[in-house]
Amino acid sequence: MNKNKKPEPKPLFLERMNKLLEGKDFEEYLEILKKEPVRSIRCNTNKISPKDLKERLEAKGWIINNPFKNNPDVMIVEGKSEENNSKDLDPGELGRSLEHVLGYYYIQELSSMLPIIALNPKEGETVLDLCASPGSKTTQIASYTKNNGTIIANEVSIGRIKILASNLERCGVSSAMITKQDGAVLCKRLKEQGIRFDKILVDAPCSGEGTLRSSPKTYKMWNIKTVKNLPKIQLRLFKNAFEVLKEGGEIVYSTCTHAPEENEGIVNSILKELGDEIEIEKINLPIKCRQGIQEWQEEEYKEETKYSCRIYPHDANTEGFFIAKFRKVKK
Amino acid sequence: MKQKYIPLRILNEEERKNILKNLKEQFGINEIPGILLARGRERLFLFCGSLTGKEIKYIEKDNPVERVGVYFAKIVIDNGEEKIRPSIEGTQILRDQITKNVYTLNDEQAEEWMKGREIQVRTGMRGFIAIKHGKDFLGCGKASEDKITNFIPKNRRVKEKAQ
Image 1 (cartoon, one colour):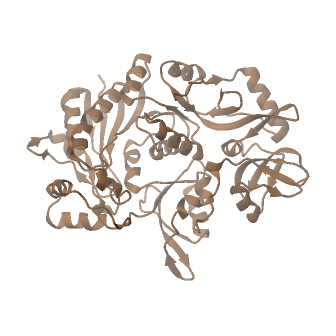
Image 2 (image 1 turned 90 degrees about the vertical axis):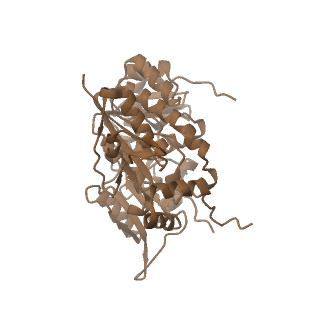
């Protein structure tokens, strides 16, 4: 058996994706899955300015581009120049550089940066990152808040918490407290203690359909049972997180999957169950994203679910993501 | 086996003073920005967030806390004396205050240093020194007569290129 052969997507997965994306759209989606994702990094502005980082990396011969005009911290490493030609970076070169080891940048997929761009945490705010490992978004929060404020970064898995701690360490995140707890239980306890947050990120555990380009093992792991079981966990996490959000505070729900059950299905339940306590907000993202869908498999969703964002890999050459942002209504 | 939970300890004013005194003597530090915490006897953490020490302990009362802030420094006994050895993050946080016992590496030495190797050099200094390369602070080493001993932890070393 050829071990290097990319696993094939399962027929049911393809059937479902073909319902979300039809015709040429679906073909383009399948086509981009065959391509490696772009190499993107995020400058850790707590340690170095984007300008200085760019200069240092360019001095190594790396070709750096800024894809988002208003986010100079976001960079794409196109390759490296060599005697008037450009060539690809060596495998692992991005993670082996001194700048990476010193925490001057974080290797992060473009679409994974979007939930924090949407949440827009600011200096002095108290932020909860409920499912924080491996720490890409926590370090992004620390960067945006300039290590001024407090982040509670939670992770339930013992194995993954080590990775989280190590990444926060490397990026010099000095304003975070790392907790090891089931997310819903943590929120219940914080609620009892009277702790409240200005902003919350629920980057929920999901079936990972959006990560197929960088993690082809997802093809093998994908199964419909997971897609059907996860929404219970995702909704429980969100509802408990909402309990510790300040009035007027904002909360982002995100996943790296396309499955509507885990995305608009959750948004729909949130809007139905939390009623006039919550409002969904429009999001402005620096890349093309599509509105949330209104119905799936005979279930109709509330109209406001359209304010959620679907990010498909072939729209902006990224991985796939889903983002929805809400505000807790002031009573 | 489940690891025993070691509670965080927020350093009291006297302990903090002693650490600052030590850092002042060795590196010229005048201020530690934030709350100092310890877990166990040696490892010191620095928290620069908005929570007070009381609030940190209050949250910890009901929730298992893995870490607060960054690993800042280690307390080490050197020739029978207690010394403070700042970590890479420690030297980066204190960078604007470090005024003495700094050794600047050249490009070649910096590459070796970040691979975790000791540097064969006569610095004319003794004891713990801050290591610098260009604008980067690269943690601390221990200077003896003809070398600098390296303390870069494995997970912070620049990995060799795979052959």
